[in-house]
Every structure is written in C-alpha cells, then in structure tokens.
Image (cartoon, rainbow, N blue to C red; front, side, top):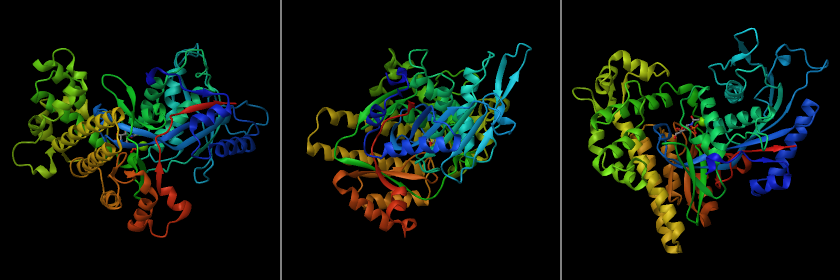
Length: 539
Ligand code: NG1
Ligand code: MG
C-alpha cells in the first residue's frame, strides 16, 4: 500500500537518477543546484528534496467531495537544496537570522527574492514547553508563502509540547513547474518545503519512526490550506505517491489510497498552457472556495432528500452521502458503500434526487439559490448554517448553484470510474484494434468532462474552451482543462505517432502562441509522461 510506504531517501546518485528516469537532464540540474548552494551559503547542502507537479487526466473538482481522481505526477518538479545553519560570529546580523528555526530562503529565479524569517514560539509556561508556533503568512501572493505553509505543519506537529527547537535552515529553491498553470506548482512547493523541514530536523531518518507517504500527504494537505485555498488532497497525493508510466487512482473515502492505473499503449499526454494565469489563492472567494461551499451544502440537501443521517454539525461530503445511502438501502446491506460496481450503478441513478437541489419558486435557475433559499433547502437554522458552512471560509456571492455543482460532481465521479475501468480492462486483454477503440472512448470521457466543467461547474474560460477545441481538431482523442481551471493548462490524449504534428498544429492555431518558438514554446506546450513522486537525496 503506497500510503504506508516510507518516503524514499537516496544516498547513492546512480540510484537516484535511475528512479527519476532519463528523459530529462536531471543530473545537470541537481549538480548545478548543489554548486550554486555552495557558492551562496559557503557550505555544501546536506539534502536536496524533490517534489513534482502533476497533471490531472480526469476527475476535476471532486477530490474535496471525496470522490476518486486520476492524476499523474509529471517530470517537471521543484528542487530544494538545504542545510542546517550554524550560527557563527560571522553570521549576518539580521535579528531573525539567529532565532530558533529561522529560515534563509533563496530562489534561483531572481524575481523570487531572498527571504529571511523566523517562527515565533508560543511559550505558555516557565518550563519553556512550546505550545505551538506562529508563522506569519500574508494574504497577498508571495513565493515564500509556500515555503512557510510547508513549515507550519512541521512546526506544529513536531515541535510542540517539548523544549526541542527546530534547526535554523538555509535553502535554495529551483523549479520547472510553471506557476498558476493548473499543474500544481503550489503542491510541489508545499510538499518539497514540508520535506525540507522534516529532513533538516532529522524526521526522515531511515529506521527510526519514519514518516510514511500517507503522513506526508496529510501534512502537506493541511499545510497548503494555510495559503488560503480549501483544497482536496489530489495534488499532494499525486506529488508524493505517483509511480512512473501509470496514472494514479487516488481515493479519499473512507481513507487515502493510491492505485497505479496503466494507460493503454499508443497515446501520450500533452499539456498546453492557455497563458491565462489563474490565481486561485486570490480569487478563491468567488471561485474555488465558493465551489467547496456549494458542493458541501449540496451534500447536506441531498442527504435530506435521500434520508441519509447527518450529524447536526457535520460537514458531510457528496461521497459520504452516497456511501451512507448505499449501505443504508436494501441493496446495500453488507458494505456496498465501498464497492466500485455499486458506486457506478448508483451514480447513474441519482438524477432525480439531484433535482431536489433546485430552489423552488421564482429564482431564475441560471442564478441558483439565494442565501435564504439555500438555508431553507438545508433544513438548518440560519445560525447553524453560518456556523457550519460559512464561519471557516470566506465566500463572495449572492447566489449559489447547488444543482449544477452536484450534477458535475456526480457525472465526473462516474467518468473517473468508467475511465479507470476501461484502462484496467485493456491492460488485461489488449490488441491493437481494441486499444484504438479504448483510446477513443477515453478521449470521449475527457471531452465530456470539459463540457461538464464549462457548463455545470463553470470553472473553464474562453481560452480553455478554445484551446481544447483546437486540440481535438488537431487530432487529440480528447482534451480538457486540468487543475482548478479558470485559466492554466489543458491536457490532451494524443496518438503517440502524431505528437510532433499535433504540437505544430496547436502552436499554429492558438493565437496566444503566435511568435513563440523553441524553448519558449516548449515551456507552454509539451508532451509529458506519468512519472515518479517526491523523494529526498542525502549527501
Ligand atoms: P490546482 O489548481 O492545480 O492547484 C486545485 C486543487 C485540487 C483540486 C483541483 C480541481 C489545490 C492545491 N488543489 O488544483 O485539490 O481540487 O483544483 O480538481 O488547491
Ligand atoms: Mg495549486
């Protein structure tokens, strides 16, 4: 079980590069980073940690409803070289530089400037036992927020209740995951930062109580919420648990699992950046976090319709409603709530129940329910409603589209299961001819996902709609947005022998690519392979 495995810590370069594969020039990047670290900090790094970005093949905006998703880590990644800092008489005099657990964070990209900060211990008693740590993460978007987010959980999980203080650390960051592109540069940053602080503080020592991949995912998930997005766990799980050559079927209910799912041969994934940057952290109140609230409230309303029990203060998710419904109905006695076949069956039959999320009366369906209508549908008092659904998150909306959002979530969850079943069936009995039929089917599911994201979840945008259409016209089996949407990348499933021609056609047809060639073009339009998850190299 991947979640129980230890984080790989390499001490041998050959083994490290072997695990990363040969398609990118890893060796050069890693040794350049180590050299540059030494130049800047006057000592060799003790670790380099790596966490990749990811592409999501299918299953968008359903991880926080606890439905399974199908992403894969990509070859592009974040690397952090780091070493503990000894405080010497020659150390710079900055005040924070000498504080416990202080951080000097530099980035190879000059626009991300050098940062020095230190966490503040909350000391409650005279015996200096630290009750918790405070780390200021400002609201505006700054690169070091992601470093701090990764630090936060390590501090508050590993350095409370004892007199042990975290090590001061120097770090140098470099990355090849484009920011704001839906390829999860954010999760790659948070996972690599979390790993850095664990490694520096001796929490990854082989043999000792090792932190598992599952632990790291949970920690990184909580950490990423510090940046202001109430995300599900897809990105962190993909960045940590992915394996080469397969997409990863990740489930969250009843607990985190990851099962490699091989894609049929003959197709390649191509990522294309729409060049519209989507700043989720800045627009969350009207975008991402609003969707989280809409799907959660939808779940409660649906639970009422299906007469599923919900605790008075519980924030039940759509997956939990279906799970409870399945094991509470006659068909389901005996644990059907967990069965994939039963899930496929019931997801196709929920249409009528989902209708109950439409507000009755005069509200125009296009605009959804008003706050009052939504509260009424939930069956809660206004006070309880606010406490359960609005006290922990900021949203900025006058209307809430419970019906459309739930419709997307259920249809998308079903597409994920169908996609996976097709992949597993082909792996079992593949011939060239049936491969082609299957690839077309997979493409069709991806296209349907795009339509659902655009029309029901309303997380696409003109650029993504246009780019996915161009990709289909250029010969993709299917094409859709990947990640949260509202900008960022698309992913297309493309016949292996046509990748070059495909890239040429898309480059020529998508207006924002005009004038881009060579490296500038391959930065935004590139084929990628499912690759391996996060690791640590110890010098
Ligand atoms: P991106 O936009 O790629 O970071 C976000 C969420 C995921 C998932 C997708 C939509 C974060 C860290 N990640 O991905 O958990 O909900 O949107 O499927 O916010
Ligand atoms: Mg992100």
